[in-house]
Length: 268
Image (tube, rainbow, N blue to C red; front, side, top):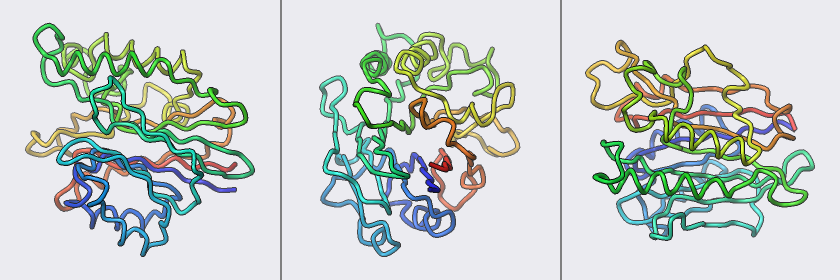
């Protein structure tokens, strides 16, 4: 069975709904995970999504900030989970269970805190929150549930490898690529039995970026990107991966997000 799973930090789903519709109409992923929806659940724009055949929608939102949503053409089981990481009430995690190719799969959708500008928790509480969030993620294992495989996607706001940023040396003291962050995320992945599917498909030293700053006057010419968006899976699903598309062109769409969609294609 062919299966496609997409992830995209949309940076306000209501503001950029035409871009979401364009993505679904053009690339038609089976499941789309959105982050930074900035939308309470009762105001989520479900109607146009259902008109396109995405009848199964789970969301975890809040007013004005954060928020995640999982939009699917495949039925979702009544096993969804909205975990309150760090116990402060932010809507940053949602997981659902679906079936594909005879397998049950739990799909985690994450929006990890960005962490502010200063990589020092003693003067920047946002950075401390990010580190605590990543520490709590270390408890999440890809094989936590017997008989259920796992996929983890989202804006993890960390570029873990040297080839995930435009300049490793120049970003070592920049939030998203500091050693304490990259080592933490690597521990989450390795300790939890996760496989980095994007790097399985395109190994280093090839550069991979999914985010380009709004601050760049010409993002494409400067090409100072970072890989902040990720797709991981449990080991049993890794051999089923056929392709990963990073839709770089989406950064040039009208009123774009600073992140672009990433789509993983499987044959399960």
